Image 1 (cartoon, one colour):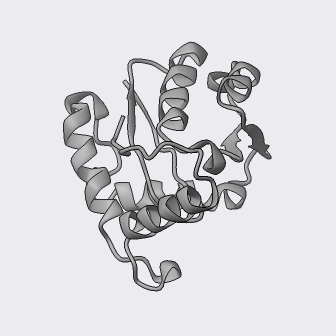
Image 2 (tube, helix red, strand yellow; image 1 turned 120 degrees about the vertical axis):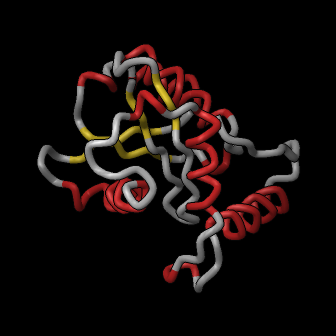
Length: 153
């Protein structure tokens, strides 16, 4: 059982995705689901670490119309938002905890707690508040986007 933690950089909004395995096809499907619940105007880029699980990155980029960048090996500072989210996640799931015992609904609850936690870099707004404001801004700038309800994977 593997987990991936997609996080929107501007609003710090996080989704926790439960995966059956770390195979490229499984990771591709999970990330495509996350990207599809995001308005196209907010899907510009994704930064990921190098690994076999991103072997289908070309197909993912084409399917959701985004660019995927890879952090250099052993360079966690190049993906600081994810490293920070992983640290926050560890406040709820301690290091060494087996993720297999958690269901997606339980982890969605943790994501909701993280997304409702005030963040200093957002002027003490929560990621949910910042995300909602960003969605409204995008809908105003791009009226052709159909308003959508954003839900967890």
